[in-house]
Image 1 (cartoon, rainbow, N blue to C red):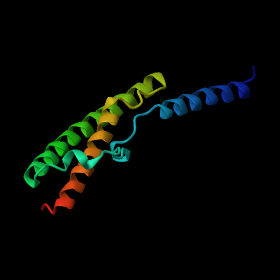
Image 2 (image 1 turned 90 degrees about the vertical axis):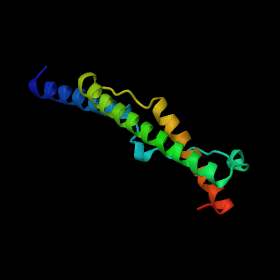
Image 3 (image 1 turned 60 degrees about the vertical axis):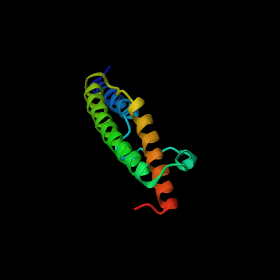
Image 4 (image 1 turned 180 degrees about the vertical axis):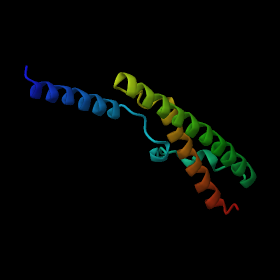
Length: 115
C-alpha cells in the first residue's frame, strides 16, 4: 500500500470514529422539550397547591439538567477514548416528563387565574 492510500485510510478511520461518536452523544438539556401531559390531574388542585407542585417540579428539573450535563461530559470523555458516546439515558426521558408536567401545572394555574 502506498503512502497516499495509507493516509486516506487513516483519515477515513479517524473521520468515521468522530462521526460515530457524535451520533451517540446525549442530547443537550436545552434541546429536550416537554412531553405531553394531560392537565386533568390538576383540575382539583387549589392555587396554593399548584404553586407548591410547580416549585417541586422546577427543583426536579434543575436536578435532571445537572444529571444530563454530567452525562454529556462523561460521554464526551468516552467518545474521545473509545469513539462512541453513551447516548441519552433515563435523565433525558424524565426531564421531558417533568417539563411536560410543569406545562400542565402552568396551564391549570392560568385556567384558574392563579398568580
